[in-house]
Length: 398
Image 1 (cartoon, rainbow, N blue to C red):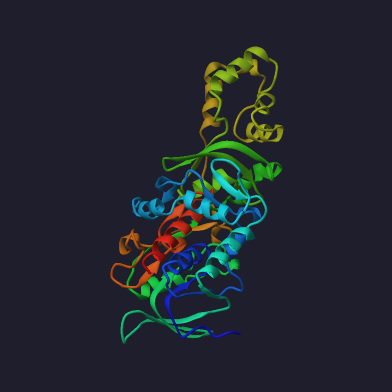
Image 2 (tube, rainbow, N blue to C red):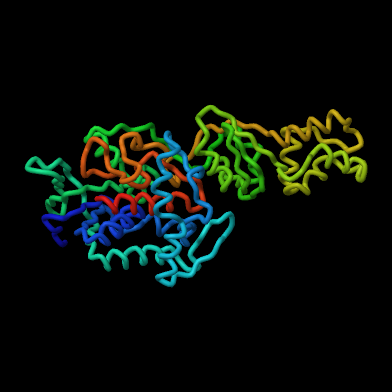
């Protein structure tokens, strides 16, 4: 196993999206860059993202697509390295891509195309990358500016240290809390962390009515805490998943209800009243089956609505049915947690970082970028865009 160099201008802990982009950005300034990662290969989350095709950015990425205790913090970095800048990089390397929906850009072929782009750029600026490298100790350099690192591949001294360790999501991919430990070690504050972009779980009692619906999906609007998303919902053996559910999970707190509009394109009372006129003998579940599926309509009518011939419903009863379907409410038992979460909500308090450089305000030469920071994007390429933007920003100064 190769020994790492004894010194570098910039040491980056983490060879994911943010770390590799930072290496490119710093290397382009002529800095001698070292990237260290404990995993067996670089860019693991890039490789598994987007079903193996990597949703590498979003054409509509803006600050409002991100959650943070300080909603303004991400604006500077996002403005200086935009989605168009990354798209230009992808095009430079001839990687074919397409828009799937809602501005989400995916590789035509495979996620490794994006990793190859980053590694090619790193090679161009002579950034050195070492995998299988465990960080054992980090200290501020006593004899001058910079930092000393003890690692399983040897010791290194650097002027600037960039923490790009990611969050706690998907521990089977090697996620650890190292970045948070380093933040605390050097006096930075942490905000509470939780799993985000994650499926909901239900109790056994809650799951029972949905047994016949597992694997089926529905186009819905889902809401919680004054935030709504219009996307697909998926019934699972554990509860609910799908894009709409993952999106709203970032805004949900334990014990809160989520509200589902099963017919976001319909004024249901008028629709049901028209069905009563046109199909008076049809049962409600038969009429409702045209919204989604027969199975869904049967479950909804059996457990939440009465089921009669349409001509037996009064206007008030039809209004009650419409209201129930537009504002169907349930309190999830919890989420699947970090095991399947795409990202970690919370992290290093942005009040302790410069939004321009990503440097710790009270600890010169120490930078935090990517998921370890309290900036969390929506589903759909936004978290990768934050990785590119924050990595680029730090690399301009580290």
